[in-house]
Amino acid sequence: MATPDIIEEEIRQKAVDIVPSRRPSHVGVIMDGNGRWAASRGLPRLEGHRRGVEALRQTVRAAIDFGLDYLTVYSFSVENWTRPVEEISDLMGLLKRFIHNDLHELHRANVKIKIIGIKDTLKPDIRALLEDAESLTQANTGITLVIAFNYGSRQEIVAAARAIAQKVADGRLRPEEIDETLFVQHLDTAGIPDPDLIIRTSGEQRLSNFLMWQAAYAEFVFLPIYWPDFDRQAFETALAQFASRERRFGGVTAHGAKVGTGL
Image 1 (cartoon, rainbow, N blue to C red):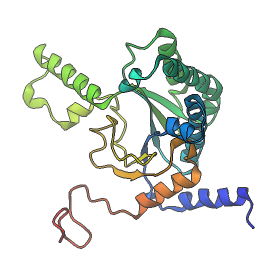
Image 2 (cartoon, one colour; image 1 turned 90 degrees about the horizontal axis):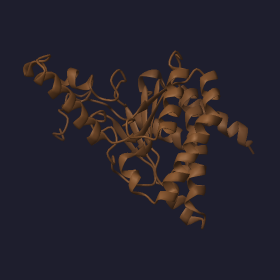
Image 3 (cartoon, rainbow, N blue to C red; image 1 turned 45 degrees about the horizontal axis):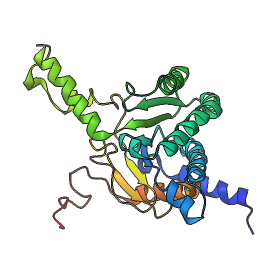
């Protein structure tokens, strides 16, 4: 019988062996189901979040092994502030510990960290922690780990529209100059390519205010497992699904049939 180490290496190699043209450059992940994972085991929600942090560590390592250029994780949404105060406090504590414990390892692995989301309303210590992580790793040239924290796609789009409108009001921009390229430059993800693949765990099948503009042509993989159970094998499964799909971006199939016609 194969040992766990051999099995893990086989899984890793499967994803590595996916030809570059079939491998996503940018993967977004909606890490969902920590609380339900804990509840199903009779554990406190905090334990689910703790296990979720470990799943994130494994995911970043796997993304490096699989040769991804960008990994964007939905760590805390603007809607999450409606959760109980105790849970929010626990989540902030886990964030601090993750950065304190993992930042230098990520830096040594040549990972570049980018934070997207609303920073102005964060507590000074959290904001400083996130900014320090970006500053330390800004010159790194490996995978970019994008952390969506206090993030909401609708809020991001509104902020971009407001910034563009202000430039028009100030006479620095003419309305006819506004196009998709200019709009993208005002999003939090300016300079980051759109995700090729978005993975969501827990079996839910929705974006939940995550990268709605950027995901216009992303492929989606919805996995029926809770986030703490997400591992290299689950990641490899999602990558394999992506590799099996034909991406047409509104064009035609390889056989000439128009997309959406059924022909």
